[in-house]
Image (cartoon, rainbow, N blue to C red; front, top):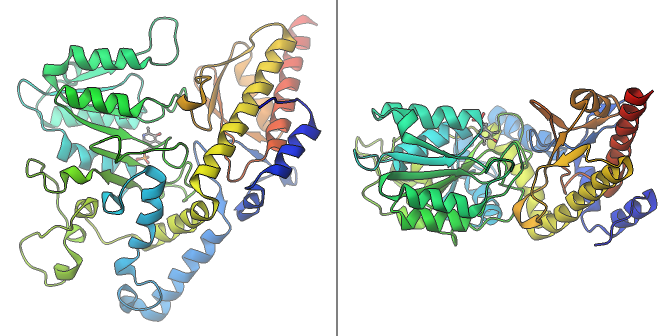
Amino acid sequence: MEYQNTLQFAQSLDEQDPLKEFQQQFLVPKHNGKDAIYLCGNSLGLQPITARQYVNAQFSNWQNLAIEGFFEGDDPWLNYHQQLTGTLAGIVGAKKEEVSVMNSLTVNLHLLMVSFYIPTNKRFKILVEGGAFPSDQYAFASQARFHGFDPKEAIIEVFPREGESTLRTEDIVQQINTHADELALVLFGGINYYTGQFYDLPAISKAGHAAGAYVGFDLAHAAGNVMLKLHDWDIDFATWCSYKYMNSGPGGISGIFVHEMHFGNKALQRFEGWWGNRLDNRFLMAPQFDPEIGAAGWQLSTIPVMLLALHKASLDIFEQAGFATLRGKSESLTGYLEFLINGINHEEDEELFKIITPQNKEERGCQLSIVCKRNAKAIFNFLTANGVIGDWREPNVIRLSPVPLYNSFTQVFEAGRVLAAAARDWRSETRG
Ligand SMILES: *Cc1c(COP(=O)(O)O)cnc(C)c1O
């Protein structure tokens, strides 16, 4: 698409946007009495207006039915999760039985590592992305120690080459091959939280399996953001959170994926709980665990109905919008932001804003990570003061994520205008 840096152009894209009505389904924080330009869906997605109604419906069920709420009413709690797994499976490219909603992300990382990190004295290493999200790093290291290994030896981090910000697939594959005989697990991010790079999941999966390792992904920044085909890519397992691109509320319920090929895999251990037991005999309260077939067998506890209601409110919107349409708009929106930022660099005659997220739209989602070469914090504060909400990562990165469900081209245009003003401010400040 040939972009133009004019309000009229942005407005014309909004008029043609098949998803333009969806913005009205979300609540936006105010800045000076007007809606803020919220480009922070990578951290916490906005609240769907329906979220409160969905939770209120469950408050009513609790009030009117109490314990009978598990079995009675329009949507009995006992089966409530099954109303979510269809849409969720569509979003991550899985079969319905391959996904389940439960717990929170770091908890699920641990539970899935209990199953898929099966170290031996010879094969005990875990290959991960360098600079993974801290919680993931703590999970990897503590799992290695739990099995009696020194994380310094057991964890192999793959970093970008000198002078580069993102990883080359060939380097990831080469590291997998180099350590092939020692690898128990490849556990990668889907999209790196810092750079916004979307890794080549099928290539990593293929290389990991060729090395004889299990392969899993943390999809915190990928689920609900980019097209995934977890089943077709033969990924063993994955987990994600629902509060970033899936707008299901702070600390919202997490999801897991376990590939169908492992439904009968007797080598896998798992930590068991009664909610993973088959529904048809769960309440016989037998001493022997009789698991549900599929990802549901990993569930432990009574479902947190309120969190599921929040998640369902959001997933129903994804269902209406259609994920392919969302992704199409997302590529154009983020492309527009990129165009505007590059325009500022051009005007300023220097690369003040260096985008470290890959240029190729196949290698990124909504997010652009922008290194500010100078006055980074001041520029970030200027954005915030002007109602553009992004987020800040030390030492000098601003992350901006236009989200196709609730951001418009006009908002992206406006954010570009504020960034350009920040750049001009900086210039007059340092030269005058
Ligand atoms: C957001 C995020 C987390 C957060 O984990 P919680 O358990 O939900 O607090 C973990 N890992 C990655 C990669 C993330 O982006």
